[in-house]
Length: 295
Image (cartoon, rainbow, N blue to C red; front, side, top):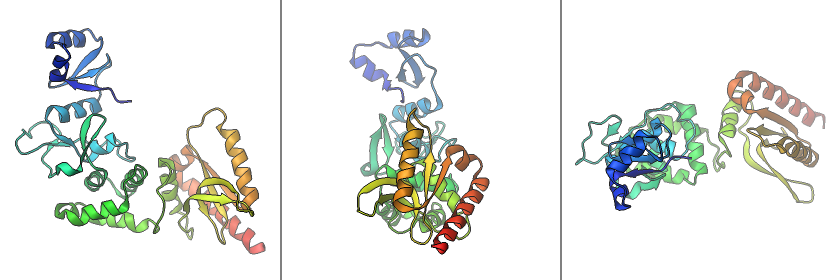
């Protein structure tokens, strides 16, 4: 939960003087000074993200690129410089300040900060990220409601956007199966990327709906390979107390309905030891093919 920011002008409209703000900041009571004429609620020390947001507000600018991605909760953007944009009539000498061409029609407010839209943010991110991390950001943008059509439309409408690592964008988009749903989480995106390390393994179907022989819905599984392979994944992220029991029952129901082999993997296995995990997935896929051949 991001702290709420406000300007000195906004505080004065509520009857709070500059002197009161300075006293509260120095005594670490109900607010802290963040940046030029911008304060934040609460006594906690300011963070890098607090400062970046405050600079946008103070300069009457727009969060772009990595900063917009962080505010929009995109995956794969940790550790990037938190840049922002300002208009031509505003000083551009402050740290992180840029002068990008941003039309007002693509600006919306996110966490109290004017922010470029998801498509513009993704295009600018292609300058900072490699293919894998840009794909992670893309999938989270799609989960948030952006469509591929919107992204492609922006690339065609804005000549300057076409020159920003277009090859990277095209490479990543070429990997997505036509009509594929967004992944359901960062972990699912990492699993999709890991599966490409397995020779001969086709792209999985995302958010697969499982029904029994009577057409009754059983469950949605994260990733699945139907047809001649017959395999599905269940990914374990952060769990609450009863999650393991629920997942075990759900997995048993899917196996009973389909006869497929389950591939259950944890966040650690997928993100920390991907090579070993890819080998295990390859072994299960080979076993799934043998089972189908025997039948």
